[in-house]
Length: 257
Image (cartoon, rainbow, N blue to C red; front, side):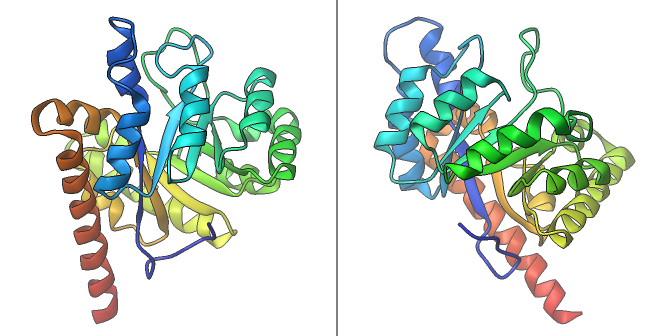
């Protein structure tokens, strides 16, 4: 998929990690992340994201293999920048790999990769993945230095960490939104395809979806949690509608200026 801007449809990537979390709480095969991915596709998702962690706390190796073989959408394989995960990605050949920081003690990803500090390590890994025809995304905080470093080592995509924006309140949330806006502009200006995700829900997605340089949002935990109450297809359908409405309103506003 090539870079798009505000004239294109904002893509929704659905992360199915926490379907596996529920399954693993009891063992067995239910609920199945592959079934959730197929429902997501029917509900309007444009891609599926799954994070295979070092400790296999939710998604398993078998899940990744079945998702790669069984979904009609691009697979975004989220992973740590380790030799084990690079080798697995090279075997499975997903549409994209999103490299993320990973610590065993964290409940969820706590921040972006420090690409600027890790360039000597990341550059050859990015090159190996791209040589295999895999698009490479780096999960980063909305900081100019990280975007410049990502571009320098040949990444195709940067996914902006939206966690600080989602967790902030009042004036602080607006400040975090402005950081995201600026980073999206900077990244697009140097040729990166810009994505965003982490912590987005019905209340926070609109302002992020309105950022014209963003091409894709990746959302998972909230959708799986909301599915408990409304069903997965309904939760995804509502998120899709909110994203589309926010992007359409922003595009119309830009046209009037």
